[in-house]
Length: 515
Ligand code: BES
Ligand code: MN
Ligand code: ZN
Image (spheres, rainbow, N blue to C red):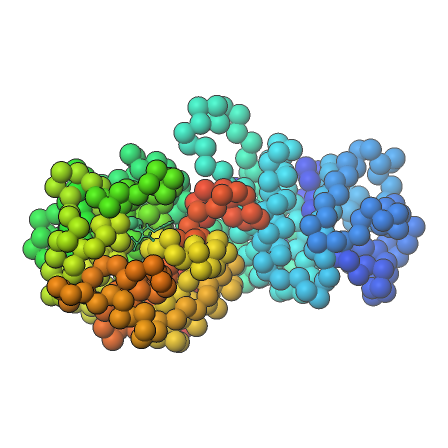
């Protein structure tokens, strides 16, 4: 899909999108012509006004009215601009509700729904008049259009034999703007990069776990690093992981035939200032069977998505390398399967983690925190100034916040706030969760320094506490995306299957920290 910024000129468009608002009639400033100044002919008897007066176009949020202009006698609405310069074959009026309340979320969602409608109509190009978007500035509007179209039209059909033949894809989206501004152009370009990163993360998660295994994630990351001049990669194989004494992580890996990998993607954006750095750590369990504490069948469905954190980090690093913020960023993904093979970790095993703490394994299905314990220790040893980890960590997260919110835990309120406001911008919403002392005690072990489960109560909190034990004082935020990594259905710009969460928010956060 290509986005073109145009200055009021292209004609013969397949479909022109015009946003409408509830409070049309009240607005005298636009002389009752419903859409934009460009259409203001000064006449109130245009056919568009008639449709509006009949109550067919009300501007209500989500309202869609599609008109074929060839059916309109002589195409005789009174706007010369629309008729002579744009002359679209179709016009889609899309209601955004009350114009004072329009947000970037609304526009992103609207464009996502529009993109799906257009796909079903098998139209390859669409045009939008930017000035018909009210209440938000042109940069935000353009960004939301790109996100809505790219994220909303996504469908994972790589493995459908029939899907390959007749694919209907939107090829061009024209954004028509009164005055071409560099800022809007930059806004479009960066929105394309961040949205495409999010789609890469979705692809990685949606692809089946017999394909996306630890080696696949490693190879994929190598490809990203090789095709991005600002990224470098370091791969830790099993031998090196053993040398580093990552026994908590290796304990998880030992039940699988697949070799584990440590994947480190490096971006240097502030070379003179190595302490200006942040580590993004993603959980990379390419399949979570539970291990010997085997999951029941229904709970194992979708466990290919247990590398969503890793996928979002790897894809975010790709975008960061392209967008070049002034900060150093390291992406880390420890990749393995959690399987119940003959060599699998037992319940009751005690492992010594990379940082020296001993861990009692009470449940082999609590493998994410074991992996992350060694990951954050590795980051600390490498001099991480800030750490954000992303993980599909606990089923309890789904119970507490459901599917609309990421849970954020951490030891640094500023960093949490930065993430929350980044999430408000991207639409990947984040909720601040507690790390209280009472639940921390649930991780106490009778035989080791700590155990890997804390009981049923506050399951997401005890899991976060576990990671916190290994983070120490480094400013840190843990994002539990167990409820948000996958979506059961299409919801606005979120498509069925992997959501790409929180890839765009990670990129946005890195930019906020780079100022
Ligand atoms: N990967 C799962 C968490 C999960 C559950 C992610 C549902 C997405 C949807 C994690 O490894 C896990 O199994 N957690 C256990 C922990 C328990 C054994 C303490 C859980 O939440 O049941
Ligand atoms: Mn598990
Ligand atoms: Zn897991």
